Amino acid sequence: MKTFIFYAAWTLLLLLGYSVTANNIQISNVTTTLVTGSPNYYTIQFNISWENSWMVSSGPANFDAAWLFVKFKNTSGDWKRAWLNTTFSNHTAPSGSTIYCDDNTGVFLYRSTYGSGNVSWQNVQLRWEYTLNSGVPTNPEVCVLGIEMVYIPASPFYLGDGNGANESTYALHVTDNTAVQITNTLVSGVKTDASGGDAQITGAGVGIDGDGGIDTDNNGTIDNASFPTGYLSFCIMKYEITAQQWCDFLNKLNSTEYASRTTSIVDNYGSHIGSQFGEFITNNPYRALGGLTWMDGCAYADWAGLRPMTELEYEKACRGSNSTVLNEYAWGNSIKVSISSVDAALDGTSGEIPTIGSLCNSNIYNGFNRTIRSGIFATPTSTRARAGATYYGVMEMSGNLSEQCVTIGNIAGRSFTGLNGNGNLNANGQADVNYWPGINGNSNTNIANGTYTTGVTSGAGSGQRGGSWWLTTIYAYVSNRSVASSFLIGSDTYQHGFRCVRSVP
Image (cartoon, rainbow, N blue to C red):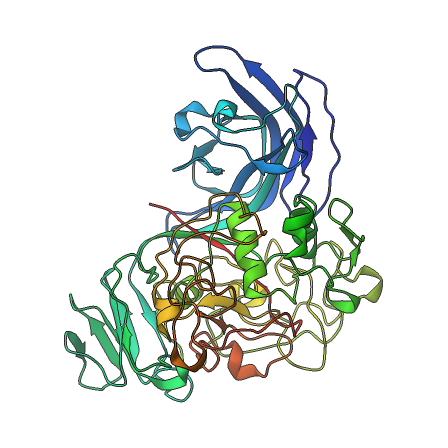
């Protein structure tokens, strides 16, 4: 699993670059070409490949994709977002691929026909409208970055599995995108069948009971129509943020931005080597990175043009359109076979595999006290359960690291509107997207003592789903909400990671 990130200076053929590794996207041969006209623009050309790609018409009826974005070094020496053309037809996708974009922060590249297997495309071309950026030097240095994503199509899905304790008393069928109402009993407009085991959504929205910390303030109405309930389509990172991706991020920050981020993640959880921005490398590039705070994850998401996911989107990405299974994990059943060890010499590398062999499908609390390589259980022939994959092919959504999500349990979370990141951070190195939990601009980010004030930068409005290597089995159930409204104070644990999503039409 590798990501190659290359740099290019202004020239038609001269390549000035080096590579680093993270997931299995490989980007190479990056060049930039100035095109004169009205207006002038740069063409950024490169080759790209990744393994085990797919586009399927049945079952999940979805595909994987590369989210591609570009940074350039400005005249002050800072890395900033390159303003890409907003019309996808102005970019060039090689035969067999499609480029899609809906704003200037990045593009999706994916298969144009049904199929599966490795992909390799030559001469992808992105159009950089550099005149819309400020501080662009005459011979700009650029960096092309890629993140593997999975497309989650718009469709009905179920919330909860009816287990009751710490989860939900009912399995709730989400059949439209109306606002969600959360109370201690099912609300008007929600029809419960005769057995009491299923609630069907009508035009009034979703009714969810108050078990398991779902609603901590007893004021449970999501009254903004933009809250991402999971019904509409979105794209999600195939893997949690890795140690290498975090190093790549840190190396693109200036001294002020860097000072706001968590850099002291050490020992067995994803060692960083380096003392300042621009110098970070890692011994464990493929390992999912624990120890990230909510504000760390939001900063990465904003910088990459992505956003946090909601806890409802978490369940949708796991379960898909399938009916619920009692105490199910992300791979669709209640059977857990945990990893017990790996080859220590390959720890955190592309060759890291479970020494137990082909039986394991999870990294959930069992005394193996650290995170593991992203995608470690998947092989070209593995089943969904064997790979530990969700319905849509997303990896490690139960176990490994807890998924930090926007909660529906308090007003700080319910104020979220699902805006995507803009590719840049504010002057203090923080995400700056309005109404993200914990971000300036969300007037409901301080939930201490039941008060809500402006300007707080914390994890208020977030929570945790999916369990981790540290937590016991029940926390890894898809429907478990026992810590869904519990936000982190600082980076006091290595069991929490981050996975970003992006809203797409």
